[in-house]
Image (cartoon, rainbow, N blue to C red):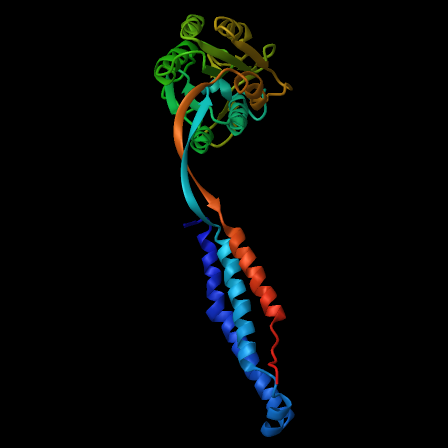
Length: 337
């Protein structure tokens, strides 16, 4: 037998510390009150039918009922059995751009922070699929390998900043190749997705060719582009005195736009790929994309796990408590004379 709620056992301390002292105090106070009401010999004749033993017995019944209720609260289980559960799912690698251009605030609160919120929604919606997190700028870093530990994945996402990679720049192609080879390389078949989240800026890393290589390995790419494709936005910087400035190059402020055409080509190079532009004022629900395109897609068997189960038996103790309470109610404090 095992208990599902060991904390309920603390309630048993109420028996010696509260219930028994209260009953003793009540019995003593009752006896003193009777002695005040009449002389001892007269009281013995008046209360000849009263049974102190029966009163104690009724108290024991109620105390036992309380103990039974506590036993039920501990959630007792027994009849152990083991069964195998097969888990099916897909492998989803989120490839997130953390270059400084993702600090642009045309998407509130910023492109990067909005992407992190969306990834958090994606993780909340996942059920059985494995997820990996890869960040990239001038180089790529695997922040979270494929896992079903969604709590750990959320913690990784929360800690992502533009400092999550050691080199500046934007190399989308390198990130796709690293993800396909190192993160998704151990699995085969049409059960793998890359969710690429970026503003589309690239520094000649041949991302379309990398996407074609992913397609050859049957890896689908869902490209999400963040930012304004018309005006673009400046890259905010924080000065030494805490004042807000904007990134400049050769004395002029740098404006970064959403390079949607490149991301469209990347998605088109992947069989079944999709491109979604998230511009200012556009709703971005990555959990809905997951439900429509990933959760409903073909899944493979990820692993077979042995699950141990027990039968809940709290009902026995609840029933026993009710019987004890019923018995206490029908037992009289007086004996037949």
